[in-house]
Image: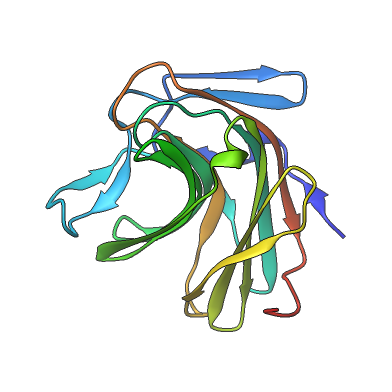
Amino acid sequence: MSTELAWSCGEWTTRPAAVVEHGTDLLVTAAEGSDAWRVTSYGFVHDTEHALLAPLPLDSAMEVEFTAAFSQQFDQAGIFVRVSADHWVKAGVEFADGAAQLGAVVTDRFSDWSLAPVPEWNGGRVRVRISRSGDALTIRAAAGTGPLQLVRVVPFSPELAAFAGPFTCAPTRAGLTVPFHSWRVTPPDSQLH
């Protein structure tokens, strides 16, 4: 059974440029230059993502739905899991090299990044779920009402205190507004495949 979370139940890691509730949606406008990354390849640390976080206990999952209408390099939105400033995961859709990409950044002192092109997802609704079970996070995503597909499995200690929720960043421009449609807690996925 899933439980819808109110937008008011989370706390921002970095306050967005603007936040407006529109019906049941939350419209989040990212600040220009906002991003989350640590060191690898680029040499910088960015910790200015706009992530609205609530507790993510063991044996639960969190799901976020948003519209991915991106046009500028590194426009991004999805779900963010935070343990600390140097230990976090973000997963969702990012506009990179001229196309929408489904991906994840896993950070434990240093960031790594995996991507797969999903150009047909741009402009549509996207659902991202992170399940926390045992010693792992399992990331899945879907376009529209389609079936969730496996994106990544991440090692994640059951002892960690973690927080998760919707996020967006706009590293290269001002004016990116992402409509988030839902934020819910669900049981974790019972199987990997």
